[in-house]
Length: 360
Image (cartoon, rainbow, N blue to C red; front, side):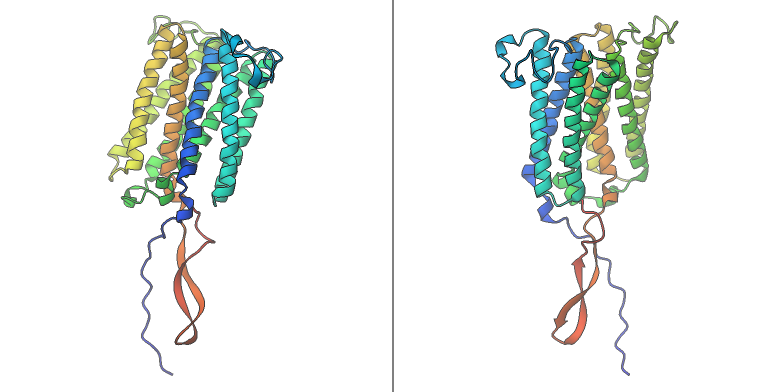
């Protein structure tokens, strides 16, 4: 019996590029627009709290008995402007989220993205219900804090959708792929994001329990480096200041891991990392000015918005560090059932394998 020459192992084949069907520029632009509108919604909500306008409209879902959308603009005065404006912006974002979820369901082939869109829609509906409950139950701190915490989660979801639909994410940031896999950065960035969200929850508790000026001086506390006396509000305020220090150290650790622990940092990491550092510095400044200005409305509100931007920027960096774990459309050797010209023997052809590897 004759034997042919021994076959060598097939050469390694790089992962196939992402299917062009996944790159949907209009969808990505719309998702980015929704995320931008959510920033405006966070600002509107923070102005409601900063101005004490939460009960300026005492009924819900109506506005002084009117349908929300038919309430006369001539009556938008004082605190009503802030509370009613917040409701209108929230309704607009809710409608945009319906469109986004439907678009993802029909146009994005990734099943997990369809679920993410549905999750964002569920979050914005729950957020509206919590907002109504804060009014109906006269602004209880627990519900108001939950309302603020869910707002941040929804914002993160819109930013994540915008990221996951971006060409860079879908293509796997193909330039300098060797600098993408950074396990140490992945760990520290994930921890940093969790710490930022925890700090935001403490800040929301401080705002909704009236503890914003429980310690009225800065950087000292009652003229000392440590509070001279304690009560629940002072403890919450102190926890927020301590949390700010922890978050600052975590961001510094992220930057150190990125720039000083070997390898050439990928631009997908360096840009959000640089922005994160800048935002943290602005946030510390706004926090100090919030106390020194006696909770001046716009400074206080911008402090909330900047905190949300710190969170989502840290989230973008974290998700990008996990990009290599999402995989690409796998390519493996699969039998080609097409008869070859040489006879009925089945050949072997490189084909995309739709069953393994997560589409990104």
